[in-house]
Length: 213
Image (cartoon, rainbow, N blue to C red; front, side, top):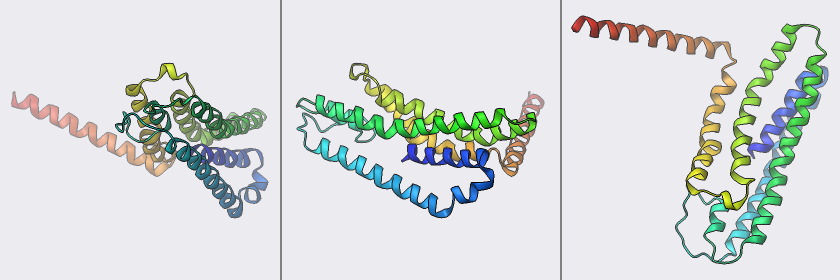
C-alpha cells in the first residue's frame, strides 16, 4: 500500500509542476478516492494470495525468527519444497512493488524536464523543494524493500532482515510526519526554538557545574 500511495503522491507532484492549470481537474476528490480504493483492492488481493499460499505449506517449526509473519521467513520454516512459492513471491512481489516505482521514476523524469525549462533559479529551487520530502521517503522506503525482498535466498540473514524490516515498517512511517512537515514554516520555527532552548539550558547546566567545582 505504501508503494501505491507514494505513486499517487508522485502523480500529485507531476500535476502540480507540469500541469498546474489542470491540477484541480487531474487530482479531483473523485480521482483521489478512485486511486486509493483501487490501490486498496489490489493490495488486498496481493495479501490474500500470499496468505493462501503460505497456509497450504507444512511447517517443521512454529517459532518464526522475525517480528511478524513475513513471507520469506515463513517459507524458511516449511518442510516441503518452496521453490514454486519463492518464484511467485519474486514475480508477483516484483510486479506489486516495481510498477509503482517505475511510475514514480517516470513522473520525476517529466518533472525534471519541466523544471529545467524554467528560466529562473528561484523557480527551480522552489519546485525541487516541493518534491524533496517525497523523494526522501521514496529513497528510504524502496532501498529497504528492495534489499529485503529482491535478493537471492542464499543471502538471507534473519538478524539483518529483522533490522531492515524495522526500517521500512516502523522507522520510515515514523519519520514521514517529520519529513513532510519540515517544509512548514511553523514547524521550522518550533524546531529552532527547541534547539535554542536546548543550547541555553545546556550552557546554563555547564556553567552551574563549573561554579560547583
